[in-house]
Amino acid sequence: MPASQRPEVRERLLRDGEIVARSDGSRHSIFPVAIGAREGQALEAWARREGAQRSIEVGLGYGVAALFLCAALAEAGPDSGHVAIDPNQATRFAGCGIQVLADAGLADLVDLVEEPSEIALPGLLAEGREFDLAFVDGNHRFDGVFLDVVYLGRLVRRGGIVMVDDHQLPAVARAVSFCVRNLGWSIEEASTDDPRHHWAVLRTAAAPDTRPYDHFVDF
Ligand SMILES: C[S@@+](CC[C@H](N)C(=O)[O-])C[C@H]1O[C@@H](n2cnc3c(N)ncnc32)[C@H](O)[C@@H]1O
Image (cartoon, rainbow, N blue to C red; front, side, top):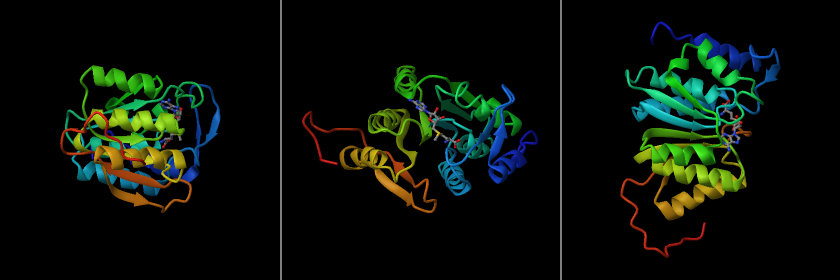
């Protein structure tokens, strides 16, 4: 682990479940908005297993998922980096996500995009960006998650990983089901360990998309 990293920041945040924002002094209880330790550990393990160097996340929030992801990226090589998309980081979250990443010595890895994902993701695609792994925990309504997974499917390399939080929500499960039944994605892991945050780890199709123009499988 690079000497500049401070893992105790993550441990303290998860233990206390609270943070005080330096930007305005506001006090925040991070759960159940933030993911729990088990999901974070699963995310970090997938990033390590995939040898991920470039990751992307929708919904930085309190930065818990990013802390786990960046711990893996920090050891993946000098070109590693993480894009975190969140339009509400400076407002609703008072900068807490970026604050914990900075405190943990991981902020240099992170590029924060303060736009809604439905605006940011097509922009990244237009720039020709590519990622190894994505984590989705943003707008949980169907249209929001659907756009996120479809765009992330194009931004993540073929056969890469898209992990989604809150798979217990019908809107999230439906969006996942579209990808599995229509885009040839597979579910690598589905966990109900945390009753408030089920997660699913999806692998995108390895082959190019050759569906005919009228292809449709009900989902
Ligand atoms: C449940 S929280 C994410 C918590 C985070 N995974 C963590 O571990 O701390 C959901 C986040 O999605 C963000 N969000 C909501 N709508 C969004 C959108 N359209 N694009 C990107 N992020 C969005 C919210 O601002 C919030 O930070």
